Every structure is written in C-alpha cells, then in structure tokens.
Length: 292
Image 1 (cartoon, rainbow, N blue to C red):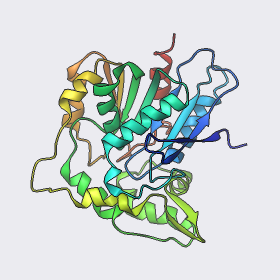
Image 2: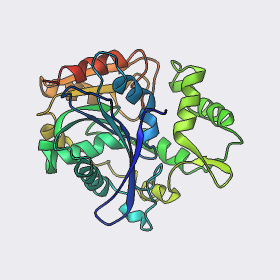
Image 3: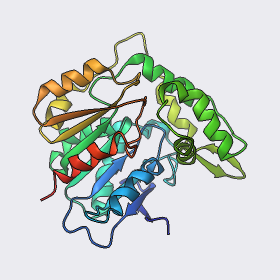
C-alpha cells in the first residue's frame, strides 16, 4: 500500500541496515536509482520522488532509498567513530551486493553526494550516472556550522504538525517555495515516534564528528575525487539559497567537463526537494537519458 518493501541486510561488521525498495512490476531494463540521503536524514526523504519514478505510467523505474547506519530503521552503531563517509560508502557497496546490483544510477543529497565522490575513487564501475543534490567537492564552512548547531539542539515536538511548524520557523527563510504539504512531508521524513514521543530519527552520537571539526582551519576538499566522478554523467542540483554549496563551486564543476549538467532550484536552500515541480522534470529527463 505504501509503494515499497522494507528490506533489511547486514553490513560487513554485522550491523543491520535498512532500505526501502520501490520495485515496479516491470522496469523494462531501466537502470535502478539508488538514493543516498543527507547527514542526519534517511530514506524517507526520497519517498515522494520514489513514488513518482516507480509509478510512472510510461517508464517506471526501480528506486532504492537507503537508511545509513544510525538513521531511520537501520541499527545504531555502538561506536560513534564509525559514522564516517568511508564506512557509509562501504555500507552502500554492501547494499548494492545485497540487492544484486552491479551498476546503478544514484541520487546523493549532501552527505550522499560526498559518499559518491568516494565511490568514484574505489568502485567507479558501480556508477552509471549520478545526481548530486546541493553538494560538490567543496562546501562552505558557515553552512556546515549551521548544520552542526541545529543538529546539536535536541527537540521533541508535541506532534508532527508542531514539528512541521518548527521546521518552517527554522528553515522557512531559505525555502519560500515550499507548501504546507511540503513542510509536513519533511517533518514526517525527519522525525519518528519512538517510545511515545516524537524525536529526530538519528543516533545523537552522529553529531560527535561535527563537534570535533576545527573551523579555524580550511575544510578539506574532494576535487581529485570529483575529477573521477565527472567521468560519469552528472546532474548537479543547487538550491538557489543554499548556504552550504556555493554558486562559485557549482560554476567550477560545470566548467570541468561536458558530462556535467546543472540546475538551480528556485526558492529552495539546503537541500532542495528533488520531487518539487521546479526540479523534477530535469531529474526525470536526466535519468531517462541514461537508459538503453
């Protein structure tokens, strides 16, 4: 009824991981899309996008949306030091094996796009093409500080409606394009009911790595890894009001290779909703161009 099947599988270290599998009755050989969420987010972020793609009446596509360790329905890791891009990249590769996929299309939002940079260095053959959602090889320190600060503040809304209003109060200035329904969808993706209260659906230990960042020093960049990733077809989406992913970085990426296409999501910040009417047509056309 929800349009997907919950699938559980073990990581290399035995931790149980979860993904949503939106598998249409027939995909006619179209490549599946594997969705990788942001730092504290989970596969529910991609639910509206996945439904539109998997239930397309003309060209349905299988979509798999992952919960990283410590997020969503995946188990929490007792060692918070394992919440790294490198470990999560290994988990993504394990997921591909669990689903029997040797090659796929990918959509990586924020953290998910960083994972794709690493994948391009260690297993480029897996990537047939990718969407980088508000992320590139260089990120802005001020935007990352904002993420660190609001993730470190534990909130317990009284209801999902209250959670939606809280998100609007926090992020509304950078997301004027979002409707009431969009904010409610976002709240239901970010929060979950656990033990009788509504909480952000990630292991609080995840923020330890953010707290350890020394912002007095330049943040590391991934330009060498991007050069490898840019050998694949790429669609780079930037939120018009993003504070994490700059226009300058987007322009440098676009100038790098003919394989890189870009689109700006008007009225959205970090990170844009890929199913939004201003973005989805570009996403669908990009994916369709990689079939066959």
